[in-house]
Image (cartoon, rainbow, N blue to C red; front, top):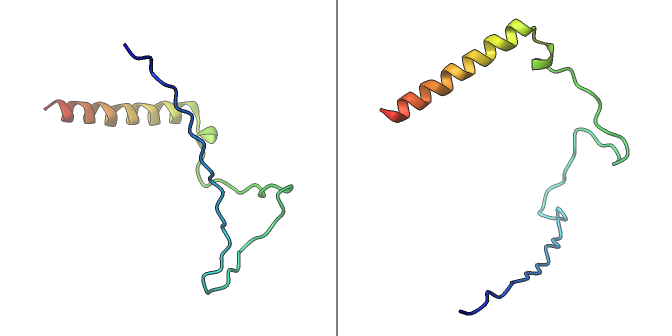
Length: 74
């Protein structure tokens, strides 16, 4: 029996991502790497739901998933 040879792969993944393809780029917002994105108001959050709302949503998701299981078993 021949022992399996371990393969070590070294790939150079350095790519030049310069945008020099004929048109200028203007970005909507520019900030440096040290400053994070400002917080944005979430239109919907599971953290803001009541416990009854969370349970209802969980039961709805479970019902849909079980429906898919039964449909797949047909």
